[in-house]
Image 1 (cartoon, one colour):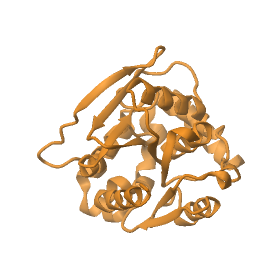
Image 2 (tube, helix red, strand yellow):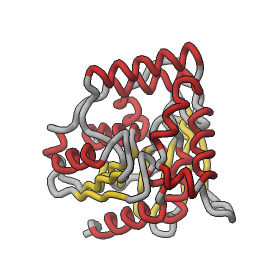
Image 3 (cartoon, rainbow, N blue to C red):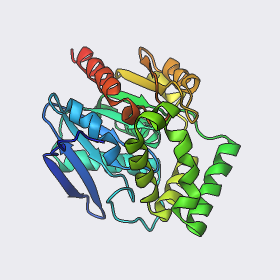
Image 4 (cartoon, rainbow, N blue to C red):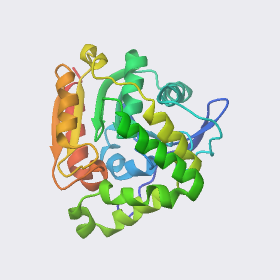
Amino acid sequence: MSSNHGFPFQDQVSVDLGKRQIPLKIAGTGIPILFLHGFPLNASMWETTIELLADQFLCLAPDLRGFGSAPEEHKSFSMRDLAIDCRDLLAAKAVRQPVVVCGLSMGGYVAMQFANDFPDLVSQLVLSNTRANADDNAGVQNRLKMAASAVTFGTERAVGEMLQKLVCKFTEENNPNLVACVRQMLLSTHPSTVAWAQLAMCKRTSFIEKMKDWRFPTLCVAGTNDPITPPSVVERMQLAIRGSRYVEIANSAHLAPMEQPEVFASELRSFITEHLH
Protein backbone atom coordinates (compact mmCIF):
# COMPACT_ATOMS: atom_id res chain seq x y z
CA MET A 1 0.00 0.00 0.00
CA SER A 2 2.77 2.40 0.78
CA SER A 3 5.38 3.36 -1.80
CA ASN A 4 8.14 1.02 -2.87
CA HIS A 5 10.79 2.71 -0.76
CA GLY A 6 8.82 1.84 2.37
CA PHE A 7 7.26 4.40 4.67
CA PRO A 8 9.00 4.79 8.03
CA PHE A 9 6.43 5.35 10.71
CA GLN A 10 8.11 7.34 13.47
CA ASP A 11 6.42 5.19 16.05
CA GLN A 12 4.59 1.88 16.03
CA VAL A 13 3.71 1.31 19.62
CA SER A 14 1.27 -0.52 21.82
CA VAL A 15 -0.42 2.00 24.07
CA ASP A 16 -1.39 0.78 27.52
CA LEU A 17 -4.94 1.81 28.39
CA GLY A 18 -5.03 -0.21 31.57
CA LYS A 19 -7.21 -3.17 30.69
CA ARG A 20 -5.97 -3.44 27.12
CA GLN A 21 -3.19 -2.62 24.71
CA ILE A 22 -4.02 -0.60 21.60
CA PRO A 23 -1.53 -0.84 18.70
CA LEU A 24 -0.93 2.60 17.19
CA LYS A 25 0.85 3.86 14.09
CA ILE A 26 2.16 7.42 14.36
CA ALA A 27 3.78 9.62 11.72
CA GLY A 28 4.39 13.32 11.10
CA THR A 29 3.94 16.46 13.15
CA GLY A 30 1.44 19.29 13.22
CA ILE A 31 -2.34 19.27 13.39
CA PRO A 32 -3.44 15.84 14.70
CA ILE A 33 -5.59 13.52 12.60
CA LEU A 34 -7.08 10.39 14.15
CA PHE A 35 -7.64 7.76 11.44
CA LEU A 36 -10.22 5.05 12.24
CA HIS A 37 -10.28 1.97 10.03
CA GLY A 38 -13.22 0.07 8.61
CA PHE A 39 -14.45 -3.51 9.10
CA PRO A 40 -12.86 -6.03 8.90
CA LEU A 41 -9.63 -4.12 8.25
CA ASN A 42 -6.99 -2.47 10.44
CA ALA A 43 -4.84 0.63 10.69
CA SER A 44 -2.69 -0.48 7.75
CA MET A 45 -5.47 0.64 5.41
CA TRP A 46 -4.38 4.25 6.07
CA GLU A 47 -0.67 3.82 5.32
CA THR A 48 -0.60 5.45 1.89
CA THR A 49 -2.92 8.27 2.95
CA ILE A 50 -0.69 8.93 5.96
CA GLU A 51 2.43 8.85 3.81
CA LEU A 52 0.91 11.61 1.69
CA LEU A 53 -0.09 13.76 4.69
CA ALA A 54 2.66 13.26 7.28
CA ASP A 55 4.59 16.27 5.98
CA GLN A 56 1.95 18.56 7.48
CA PHE A 57 -0.06 16.58 10.03
CA LEU A 58 0.42 14.37 13.06
CA CYS A 59 -1.24 11.14 11.90
CA LEU A 60 -2.44 8.58 14.43
CA ALA A 61 -3.96 5.29 13.30
CA PRO A 62 -4.94 2.71 15.96
CA ASP A 63 -5.97 -0.89 15.50
CA LEU A 64 -9.40 -0.94 17.15
CA ARG A 65 -10.27 -3.68 19.66
CA GLY A 66 -9.44 -7.11 18.30
CA PHE A 67 -8.38 -5.88 14.84
CA GLY A 68 -4.95 -5.99 13.22
CA SER A 69 -2.26 -6.70 15.80
CA ALA A 70 -4.54 -5.88 18.75
CA PRO A 71 -5.06 -8.74 21.23
CA GLU A 72 -8.10 -10.90 20.62
CA GLU A 73 -11.15 -9.67 22.53
CA HIS A 74 -13.08 -12.13 24.68
CA LYS A 75 -15.93 -9.80 25.63
CA SER A 76 -18.42 -7.81 23.60
CA PHE A 77 -17.89 -4.11 22.94
CA SER A 78 -19.90 -1.19 21.59
CA MET A 79 -19.21 1.78 19.36
CA ARG A 80 -19.14 3.86 22.55
CA ASP A 81 -16.45 1.59 23.99
CA LEU A 82 -14.34 2.14 20.88
CA ALA A 83 -14.88 5.92 21.10
CA ILE A 84 -13.76 5.86 24.74
CA ASP A 85 -10.66 3.91 23.69
CA CYS A 86 -9.90 6.71 21.22
CA ARG A 87 -10.33 9.36 23.91
CA ASP A 88 -8.05 7.47 26.27
CA LEU A 89 -5.53 6.86 23.50
CA LEU A 90 -5.23 10.57 22.76
CA ALA A 91 -4.78 11.31 26.45
CA ALA A 92 -2.12 8.60 26.78
CA LYS A 93 -0.16 10.11 23.89
CA ALA A 94 -0.55 13.63 25.35
CA VAL A 95 -2.51 14.94 22.36
CA ARG A 96 -4.17 17.88 24.09
CA GLN A 97 -5.58 19.91 21.21
CA PRO A 98 -8.80 18.97 19.37
CA VAL A 99 -8.19 16.51 16.56
CA VAL A 100 -9.46 15.91 13.06
CA VAL A 101 -11.35 12.60 13.33
CA CYS A 102 -11.38 10.66 10.06
CA GLY A 103 -13.31 7.39 9.94
CA LEU A 104 -14.21 4.98 7.15
CA SER A 105 -17.27 2.71 7.29
CA MET A 106 -17.23 1.18 10.80
CA GLY A 107 -14.55 3.73 11.64
CA GLY A 108 -17.10 6.35 10.61
CA TYR A 109 -19.53 4.95 13.18
CA VAL A 110 -16.83 5.26 15.83
CA ALA A 111 -15.99 8.77 14.61
CA MET A 112 -19.63 9.86 14.91
CA GLN A 113 -19.88 8.34 18.38
CA PHE A 114 -16.66 10.12 19.38
CA ALA A 115 -17.90 13.44 17.96
CA ASN A 116 -21.22 13.06 19.75
CA ASP A 117 -19.71 12.06 23.12
CA PHE A 118 -16.58 14.22 23.12
CA PRO A 119 -17.31 17.27 20.91
CA ASP A 120 -14.68 19.40 22.65
CA LEU A 121 -12.00 16.97 21.42
CA VAL A 122 -13.00 17.38 17.75
CA SER A 123 -11.74 20.16 15.48
CA GLN A 124 -13.06 18.68 12.22
CA LEU A 125 -14.82 15.49 11.17
CA VAL A 126 -14.26 13.38 8.05
CA LEU A 127 -16.80 10.64 7.31
CA SER A 128 -15.77 8.39 4.44
CA ASN A 129 -17.92 5.64 2.93
CA THR A 130 -20.19 5.42 5.95
CA ARG A 131 -23.76 6.13 6.99
CA ALA A 132 -25.42 7.95 9.90
CA ASN A 133 -28.60 5.89 10.17
CA ALA A 134 -28.85 2.72 12.26
CA ASP A 135 -29.49 -0.67 10.64
CA ASP A 136 -33.01 -1.66 9.69
CA ASN A 137 -34.29 -5.14 10.60
CA ALA A 138 -32.84 -6.72 7.47
CA GLY A 139 -29.47 -5.14 8.18
CA VAL A 140 -29.49 -6.41 11.75
CA GLN A 141 -30.32 -9.93 10.59
CA ASN A 142 -27.49 -9.86 8.04
CA ARG A 143 -25.03 -8.82 10.74
CA LEU A 144 -26.22 -11.53 13.11
CA LYS A 145 -25.88 -14.08 10.30
CA MET A 146 -22.28 -13.00 9.61
CA ALA A 147 -21.44 -13.10 13.32
CA ALA A 148 -22.77 -16.64 13.62
CA SER A 149 -20.96 -17.70 10.46
CA ALA A 150 -17.64 -16.35 11.74
CA VAL A 151 -17.93 -18.19 15.04
CA THR A 152 -19.08 -21.43 13.42
CA PHE A 153 -17.08 -21.59 10.20
CA GLY A 154 -14.29 -19.01 10.54
CA THR A 155 -13.41 -15.64 9.03
CA GLU A 156 -13.02 -16.65 5.39
CA ARG A 157 -16.48 -18.18 5.18
CA ALA A 158 -18.01 -15.17 6.92
CA VAL A 159 -16.36 -12.25 5.12
CA GLY A 160 -14.87 -13.75 1.94
CA GLU A 161 -17.59 -12.39 -0.33
CA MET A 162 -17.15 -8.85 1.06
CA LEU A 163 -14.08 -8.25 -1.10
CA GLN A 164 -16.24 -7.94 -4.22
CA LYS A 165 -18.06 -5.01 -2.63
CA LEU A 166 -15.05 -3.28 -1.08
CA VAL A 167 -13.15 -2.44 -4.28
CA CYS A 168 -14.40 -1.52 -7.73
CA LYS A 169 -13.60 -3.14 -11.07
CA PHE A 170 -11.14 -0.33 -11.91
CA THR A 171 -9.12 -1.24 -8.81
CA GLU A 172 -9.30 -4.96 -9.56
CA GLU A 173 -7.93 -4.39 -13.04
CA ASN A 174 -5.32 -1.74 -12.25
CA ASN A 175 -4.14 -2.49 -8.73
CA PRO A 176 -4.12 -6.25 -8.05
CA ASN A 177 -1.55 -5.78 -5.28
CA LEU A 178 -4.00 -3.63 -3.36
CA VAL A 179 -6.75 -6.20 -3.83
CA ALA A 180 -4.45 -8.90 -2.46
CA CYS A 181 -3.52 -6.70 0.47
CA VAL A 182 -7.16 -6.03 1.33
CA ARG A 183 -7.93 -9.73 1.11
CA GLN A 184 -5.07 -10.52 3.47
CA MET A 185 -6.38 -7.96 5.97
CA LEU A 186 -9.86 -9.45 5.80
CA LEU A 187 -8.73 -13.03 6.31
CA SER A 188 -6.32 -12.18 9.14
CA THR A 189 -9.14 -10.82 11.33
CA HIS A 190 -10.06 -13.03 14.29
CA PRO A 191 -13.43 -14.79 13.88
CA SER A 192 -14.36 -13.50 17.33
CA THR A 193 -13.58 -9.93 16.24
CA VAL A 194 -15.81 -10.36 13.19
CA ALA A 195 -18.61 -11.49 15.49
CA TRP A 196 -18.15 -8.85 18.21
CA ALA A 197 -17.90 -6.05 15.66
CA GLN A 198 -21.04 -7.16 13.84
CA LEU A 199 -22.96 -7.27 17.12
CA ALA A 200 -21.67 -3.80 18.02
CA MET A 201 -22.60 -2.34 14.65
CA CYS A 202 -26.12 -3.74 14.65
CA LYS A 203 -26.73 -2.03 18.02
CA ARG A 204 -25.23 1.32 17.05
CA THR A 205 -27.04 4.64 17.43
CA SER A 206 -28.54 6.65 14.58
CA PHE A 207 -26.98 10.11 14.38
CA ILE A 208 -29.19 11.61 11.68
CA GLU A 209 -31.05 13.81 14.17
CA LYS A 210 -28.16 14.44 16.54
CA MET A 211 -25.76 15.61 13.85
CA LYS A 212 -28.04 18.52 12.99
CA ASP A 213 -26.64 20.23 16.09
CA TRP A 214 -22.97 19.57 15.29
CA ARG A 215 -20.94 22.69 14.66
CA PHE A 216 -17.49 21.41 13.64
CA PRO A 217 -16.60 21.43 9.93
CA THR A 218 -17.44 18.07 8.38
CA LEU A 219 -16.39 16.43 5.12
CA CYS A 220 -18.45 13.51 3.78
CA VAL A 221 -16.74 11.31 1.19
CA ALA A 222 -18.39 8.79 -1.13
CA GLY A 223 -17.04 6.34 -3.69
CA THR A 224 -18.82 6.59 -7.03
CA ASN A 225 -19.05 2.79 -7.30
CA ASP A 226 -19.68 1.94 -3.64
CA PRO A 227 -22.47 -0.65 -3.28
CA ILE A 228 -22.29 -0.70 0.54
CA THR A 229 -22.73 3.03 1.21
CA PRO A 230 -23.77 4.45 -2.18
CA PRO A 231 -23.35 8.16 -2.90
CA SER A 232 -27.04 8.75 -2.17
CA VAL A 233 -26.58 7.42 1.38
CA VAL A 234 -23.53 9.62 2.01
CA GLU A 235 -25.34 12.64 0.54
CA ARG A 236 -28.26 12.08 2.90
CA MET A 237 -25.83 12.17 5.81
CA GLN A 238 -24.11 15.27 4.50
CA LEU A 239 -27.42 17.13 4.14
CA ALA A 240 -28.13 16.50 7.83
CA ILE A 241 -24.92 18.27 8.93
CA ARG A 242 -25.08 22.04 8.69
CA GLY A 243 -22.36 23.55 6.52
CA SER A 244 -20.76 20.22 5.67
CA ARG A 245 -19.12 19.34 2.36
CA TYR A 246 -19.74 16.37 0.07
CA VAL A 247 -17.05 14.85 -2.16
CA GLU A 248 -17.48 11.93 -4.53
CA ILE A 249 -14.34 10.06 -5.61
CA ALA A 250 -14.38 8.40 -9.02
CA ASN A 251 -12.97 4.92 -9.68
CA SER A 252 -13.52 3.80 -6.11
CA ALA A 253 -16.00 1.67 -4.22
CA HIS A 254 -16.12 1.26 -0.43
CA LEU A 255 -12.40 1.85 0.16
CA ALA A 256 -11.97 5.26 -1.46
CA PRO A 257 -8.90 6.23 0.65
CA MET A 258 -7.12 3.05 -0.44
CA GLU A 259 -8.29 2.91 -4.04
CA GLN A 260 -7.63 6.60 -4.76
CA PRO A 261 -5.25 7.70 -1.99
CA GLU A 262 -3.84 10.72 -3.82
CA VAL A 263 -7.30 12.14 -4.48
CA PHE A 264 -8.48 11.37 -0.96
CA ALA A 265 -5.39 12.88 0.67
CA SER A 266 -5.65 15.99 -1.48
CA GLU A 267 -9.29 16.51 -0.56
CA LEU A 268 -8.50 15.94 3.11
CA ARG A 269 -5.54 18.35 3.09
CA SER A 270 -7.57 21.06 1.39
CA PHE A 271 -10.50 20.63 3.73
CA ILE A 272 -8.41 20.76 6.90
CA THR A 273 -6.32 23.76 5.88
CA GLU A 274 -9.38 25.66 4.66
CA HIS A 275 -10.91 25.47 8.15
CA LEU A 276 -7.84 26.32 10.21
CA HIS A 277 -9.03 29.85 10.90
